[in-house]
Amino acid sequence: MLDRVRTDDNRFRQTFVERLGALEQIRSQIYLSGTYVRDYLLSPDSALAEQAGTQRARLSGIEAETRALLGRYAASLDPDEREAFQALRTEIDDYWHALQSTFDWTSKQRDRLRFTFFYEQLVPRRTTMLQIADAIESINQRGLMRAEDRFRASADNLRWSLRATFGIALLGGVLLALGTIALTLRLERENERARADLEDLSARLVRAQEDERRSLARELHDEVGQSLSAIMMEAGNAELADTPPEVVEHVRSIAATAEKTLNEVRNLALLLRPSMLDDFGLVPALNWQAREMGKRNGLDVRLFAGDDCDDLPDEHKTCIYRLVQEALNNAARHSGARTVQVNVKNAGDRVLFSVQDDGSGFDKRTVRGLGLLGMEERVRRLGGNLRIDSAPGRGTAISAELPLP
Amino acid sequence: MPRPIRILLADDHTVVRDGLRALLERQPDMAVVAEAGDGRECLQMAELHLPDVVLMDVAMPEMNGIEAARRIIADNPKTGVVMLSMHQDESYVLRSLRAGAKGYLLKDSPREDVLSAVRAAAEGRSFLSRKISRMLQEDYVRQLESRGLEDSYELLTDREREILQLLAEGKANKDVANLLNISLTTVETHRGHILQKLSLHSTADLILYAVRKRIIM
Image (cartoon, rainbow over all chains, first blue to last red; front, side, top):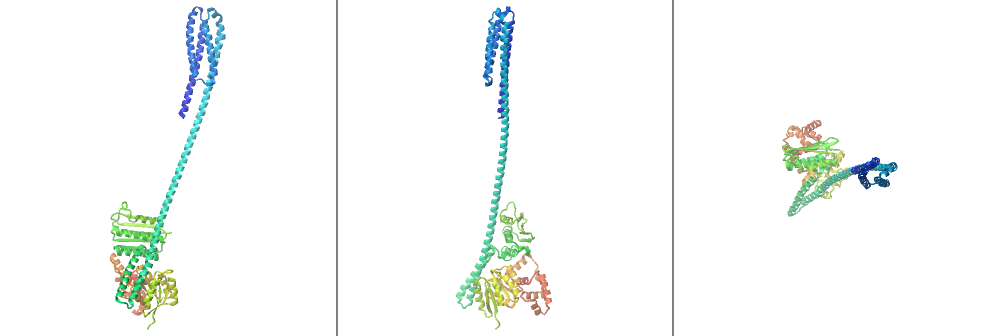
């Protein structure tokens, strides 16, 4: 656009200069022709015939040139100058006619008319023509000025529209950026919300699972277990009466089955969730867990925990119990550990605990799973943090701290 | 014929209560004077009937058996409380004994154990289910073995071992003093030494220790 304006401007200036040149040439041709005619009129009579031929040839050359100039000028004629140009052309035609006529004069005519012609015809006509040329020039000049005004205006326009374009582009850019930021923030918020929802859901799932286990364990232990006890007791009572030996045998078999089932139910209930955790607190439950690991896996579990660790919020003691359980199971199943040390310490505003085994350890970079993710999840939900230190051949230490409410 | 042992039965399962009542009523030296279905009712019945022995479930609604035992014994220290439980774990045994219970029975204990426990409690002696004492002993041995610990029992003098056994059987300091013809303060001093040497804190711990070491039962 800027280029176009500049090109327009240049072309216009060039046209103007060309016209000015044409006018200048026309003007000089007129002067030149006048000079020739004056010379001819004033030249001595002896050379008249010869002179007339030469002068005529010269003038017709000038005339042809002038007409060509006029023709060229007419091609790029501006509406404003048409009238003046037409007048100029008429004047020039008349002028040529007048000039031409001088060559046909006889010597006498020449002597008689030459001064009159010069002062009354040639000079006034020439003056008129030059005035018209000046007028055309000034029209031209005005045209140029108008054009320049137009260009200035259009340059102003251009500048303004450039500014406007720039402004709009800037505004658009800013709006786009703001829009993008807003969208990003919204997506991030949504993402955050989705993650929070997911965490919340997983927390609720864990809680629901724990509640389910608790009630299932209670149900098994208290209801099923009690009923089995009652069966055993009734079987014993039946045995006391003077019952036939074959019936006693059946009754004993019933009692034995009931006892076996009772033991299974009891173990099942404890594995689901040890009742000590709810009845007495964390330490008795961990003690039971430690003894169980000793009995079942031959693992020597040493528990160091103060009695002040019993009275923790339900979620905290469940979290610690499950983590220790998981760590002990890992130690027994994967690490070949012989002894495990479990520490629990209530520091007032938080509770610290750790499980350290002397097993084979593992490479943290390659081993995922082992319930480590679940551990992290449980700890993070209570606002705590979990640390796992392990390397092949150096055992495993899992430590965590939970802030207390 | 001496006065029968007056028993209060407390269990939230009527089937269990009925079974126990049938067993106890058949004994000539026992009489069930009242029954209760939860801890709170058990307290009221104990206050009302002043039984010799309370045979009660550890897990009961309203108030658990251990808490009820503590209160009954606080009100009337002569009452012999025997806990009946589904729980084999030592934390239940320990807490029951700390609450002042004389006996701890598993619900699948043989009938003879139930009767022995009631009789022992009536006389102020302790009694644990055979299964329980066996379990405690096994745990103790396993602990000693796995840790290569020195047996602290070796630290006790003969007199201290004698007193430990009597205390673990449920005898009061005064009874021990009378039996051994020594002063009450001497018994108390011995008792302090025993607890210190064995790193124990209470008579309940002492009973558990004695069971583990097979000093009693």
